[in-house]
Amino acid sequence: MKKKKYQNAITQHIREHSSIYMFIIVLFFMGVIFGAIVVNSISLSQKEDLYYYLSQFFGQVTNGQVAESKDLFFQSLSHNSKYIGFIWLLGISIIGLPIILILLFIKGMVVGFTVGFLVNQMGWHGFLLSFVSILPQNLIVIPIFIISATISVAFSFKMIRQQFMKKKGESILPLFGRYTLLLFFAFIIIAVAAGIEAYISPFLMKTVLNMVESFITIVFI
Image (spheres, rainbow, N blue to C red):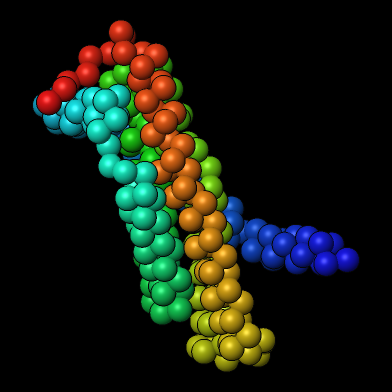
């Protein structure tokens, strides 16, 4: 019964906020496309500089010289938690509503630029590297960002309706309680993504780099 109750609650939530979800998903993918396009607009010297630093990083990964997995875990957890926490605060502030959308667009742009640059410089090897280094954790992180942004936008709209349009509805306090609880669950899932990024992605990257080492040039320090 509990499982069915939760399923019904999730279904109702998605149905109620389907238009916001659709808008935010489209916005995110617009950011991805824009980021991929930006790759072609940067100068040759900028591409060479970026590729130089990228090659150094790949060399460090191959030699096992990257930071400890524990340090990578806490770094990833801290970064993504701050991102989610900031979105949560913006949802409460009401005036932060457009900033939430900008942040999500920028997140999409970063992903698009990273994948686009790797593919642009390394062809299918770059695609394979982006697949093992970017995709695993982002399969969790991106949906969480999209869900968090949607919930924050929806919460802001409800506050605007109640505070400024004087429309009657559910009290703000229970809404705020659920809003905060969802933030807590987001942090737990972000921790799982950080674990993947710290303990699985480096191993996959090292494996792929060893496989394609004869095809790409890696600069060692």
